[in-house]
Image (cartoon, rainbow, N blue to C red; front, side, top):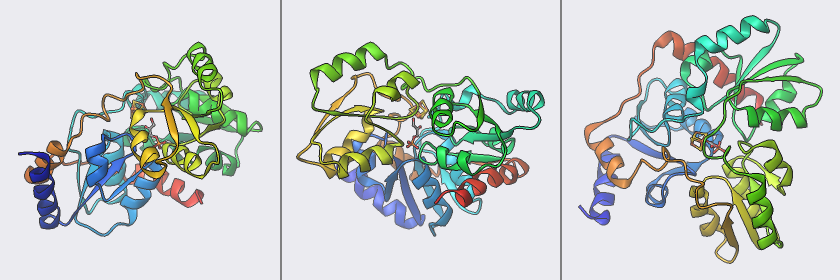
Length: 304
Ligand code: 13P
Ligand code: SF4
């Protein structure tokens, strides 16, 4: 089947299964084109908690589809590529977190949405990169275990200095590899550009940026900015919306290697297969789901 036929079939199957296609900002262009909504982790979880449909096809990585299922257990949630995981989410386990909680029994546990349902179930509140600072500011207690991203933890700690943030030492394999010397070089090359980065980058990279935020916040910042040139320090999938919203602005990738291989697994063909065979369905242990939902609900309650 060519792309046109695939698109027609997907639209037919969507209707048949009363489905919505949800895609993260890092998905390939053909997936973003056909999706009903494209956004950051926060926008997508909010959408999944309120949309009325029978089936959600989640084009992203495993923890995102899991979050949709946690919030909407009555819906069939499909992840088109079952091997699309997030290595950072895999860096923390529920058992590991339980051990850490024993060492800091008075601490509140904030877990980044990039985590498994089991880890969310052991946490007090979830956050995304778009609301982590806001959430931590609203917590009364001083001591906060923040898992699993050490870089987002450090981003939050700098902006909320009255809290004692105890980081889990996880990181994103895509963002963590950006080196300060490469940033210096590209900034010299494009000195009239603004540098926009994701807070999953190392603290020294965030220090050098004009703005750090979630994928949606980066896209919004560039769209509203009077500046015309930007260096992008996050996964290259954001270029699709950046260019679409800003046809007259110029975007330079910080490096051509800023690719999340897991986000790139999903294609139009995988969406077709997913809807055609209703695979791969996300199912969760009900006790874990209910406990995990508490921390996601708390996030939704605390974020404006
Ligand atoms: P956003 O919530 O900013 O879209 O980020 C998700 C993610 O996995 C970043 O690497
Ligand atoms: Fe996980 Fe990093 Fe990929 Fe985001 S970019 S899904 S944090 S590996």
